[in-house]
Image (cartoon, rainbow, N blue to C red):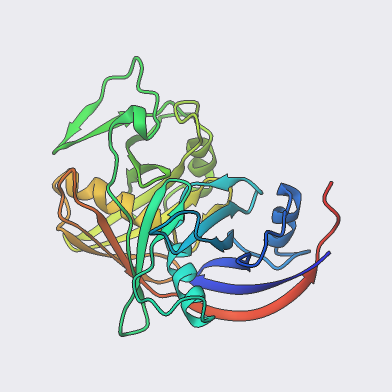
Length: 288
């Protein structure tokens, strides 16, 4: 089975994009894993599928599979690449695009400087809706937020649980360069307190308007950037009174700008790059 694809990246978070507007490929989890494989496939953190509008008032459906083949709710850097793809391929001439994801509707907007600004929706900090199992735990107040202890090998960290349509655990570190991302990331990702697993964000404050961030992503491992992770990190910092309402987030792959007014009904806005890399085609193994 041979398919065509487009390779894109947003701040180093890289994607294989599949145009399924004329029909679904019907790929299996194993085939998504093959596409994401950096040795035998194309190589990507996530596979993004562009599908026709599922309802009136929606322009496209946006489906995301992680490198492990599992479907996930949201991907912020992918949303920017999705918007750039459908516009540049002539699938729409709109500058603001309404897109259905597994977690709800988002609205990427192409900006005059070639970037993409995405309304990522409202954050969720209620533990049961992240979801995070807080039963039997005593939270620690941090400004208007709560931090929760996680039992890991050795002394566990205190984390802020945030959902941006997908679950995140944000913890502060003194220096992201020396943070134990490879050690703690997998433990946090699969911690029993997070029934859907979780993205683990390691956050360093530079100033009230500038942070550095590394994210160990659920189903993908550490990536060069994570858009929803940047949103969750800034939300956690604002709620704790440590960050301003607009923050520059330095990831290992590039710069993202996150803005949130701080209210329960306020959306989080993310602005960043979305870059075409190449087009190609590949022979997929038969689905098992």
